[in-house]
Amino acid sequence: MTMTVRTRIAPSPTGDPHVGTAYVALFNMAFARSHGGQFVLRIEDTDRLRSTPASEEKILNALRWLGLDWDEGPDIGGSAGPYRQSERSEIYRQHADRLLADGHAFRCFCSAQRLGELRAAQMQAKSPLGYDGHCCDIEPGDSQSWADADQSYVVRMRVPREGQCQFDDMLRGTIAIDWTQIDMQVLLKADGMPTYHLANVVDDHLMGISHVIRGEEWISSAPKHILLYQYFGWDLPVFCHLPLLRNVDKSKLSKRKNPTSILFYQRMGFLPEAMLNYLARMGWSMPDEREKFSLTEMLEAFDITRVSLGGPVFDLEKLRWLNGMWIREDLSDQQLADRLQDWALNRERLLEFLPFAKQRMETFSDLAPLGHYLLVGMLPIGREALLTTVDSEEQLEEILQYALWRLETLDNWQRESIFAALKSLADSMELKLKVFLAPLFIALTGTHASISVMDSMQMLGADISRARLRHALEIVGSIGKKKLKKMEKSYAKLI
Ligand code: GLU
Image (cartoon, rainbow, N blue to C red; front, top):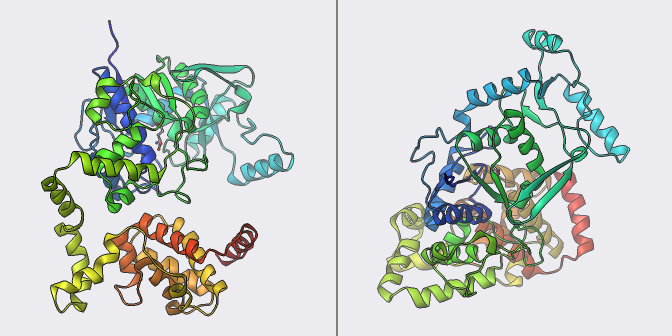
């Protein structure tokens, strides 16, 4: 009997849709389709504080925009649902109980204070961090009665203290990791919610996932997962860890150096076909090595063993070049006109902008100058224009850099939260809001007179806004390494 291939993508809805998610989704979909199998989308929203329905919706929309589609998921259902982990808590609790009953897991009653002290002591002694097994040997009877008496606890998995975990990876061969490097992972938190590790393994098994294809950052979690499969007595899936996407300098792809949100690329006017083509080229190649190919062509030729492990570089310049080819070679003028209309002049976008523009318009032709900054990528602003807004170059650098750092950590990109974040930063810098916002205005909109900075930022989206601040900092161009270190220190004191 041949096994049914089932793969999955399991994003956590805690922010904007990431290009890395699309990349892993594409390879999962290609693998499933080329084996006549199914591709499942599951939402891993066990982190209740950071997960939002808005982020889930953005992720699903972005993946669909790219042309990816799944056979089962929270939006379309399926026989292995529900596909949102927040709707499956009972299942995880039962599985944690089973591990407790079989002695594969134990209740840990350690206080946050004890764990904090343990960590501090380990750090000082420069010894490996991790749980020390303090609650490992509590008698099951005691453990039960303390739990019954409502003492707070978490459930941790038992982990061998010697030997190695060995497992096979489709691309990497046998991987061996010492058990001493593996922490006695918390499986169920004090509030009864599962951690990623428990929920992920239970779901992959119950959803019949045959191949776990994911980013290489999860290799170090694989031993915990494998042990859980063994504890439950389940067959292991096949593991395949894809190479991480990298910045041009080879560091891990990060929004500090490269826009990582799919929404940025949408907003900049990249074609979904070209994006998908470029993501497919990340570590993978067509048998004839050609650069430009469609999803259908990729699916016909797909063979996962052609993934090479040298860190694939996500290079914006290369993507632009490929996108240009798609524009020229694959779209007729008619099609291009439709695409442009969809992209920039669609009703939704106009309706977002018109309430602001209307106040300043006397004729229709006033629209373009008012809204041009919403349609372009980086703005051709000059150093002088930025400097006229401030007292000194130093002040300019501080405002731009601190605002950028503050906005890089802002999860909720709504006018109110952007305002609150910037206002509190201006206050702690002891600057009037108007003074603080003046250079941001130029950096983001290119002019002195435009729609308010907050509204503009909300319309531009997080990634374009941040990219423009970064661009303005490059134009000022005077922050060296040493200065940056100093600024980091002063910034840390501010917040
Ligand atoms: N929820 C995890 C993530 O956000 C899924 C990792 C996995 O594929 O196991 O990437």
